[in-house]
Length: 289
Image 1: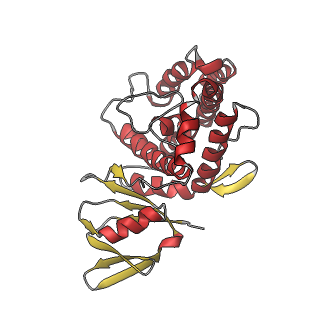
Image 2: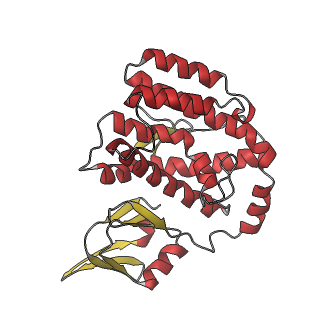
Image 3: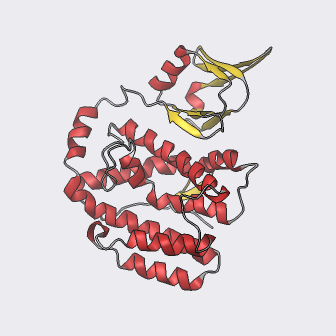
């Protein structure tokens, strides 16, 4: 089973040789077996990469993420031939719209519960109780927008009443980077199942290529928030720490797993439940604060 997250942060050449990713830097050479790799993040624009390596990463469904000049995720490799049943999956997905609202309600409820736990971790008891009550009041499709009300209370309590998610401040830089790493992992799982990331169950942005991923990420976002409020990340380490987050041990369906593996099971479970119009026995990623 693949278990490595490879981060390339210095000038080098990446190429393919006999089922190995080969990294050449001057006279130095490092090799990593492709079967061991889950994700490759090219964190600098000073890297050259061969077409043969890109092709093999695609064939083996290894996520390849390219970063911009500021080392922020810019784009990723998404294989065309990702699943033998893509046509069937896409037909199913187009028919999801009605049944998906049942699942969306549960996704929102779990997100609010996880947000409330972060508030409890910070000792914000009044706001914790408020969000916990919101979580019990989520209706079909979240028609009363408990998610939006919770977000306002949540972020104002954690970061101050003048804070908003559009400000060019360090907190938002940390959050955005962490969310983008999670989103890439979810994108990979959706494509491996043969579904389209563009067709969401709640998010419907015409210019958003990851509407479905933005739906499924919601209950896991508070884990990124926890990394920020607990002081686990700062300007010197946030990029490496959020990549390492994918190897954090979490719980899923009573099992202790790496987050990346738990995300795989979570996406499979959610997509199956949407297809079946069944919100019983939904499983979400759980983590300790």
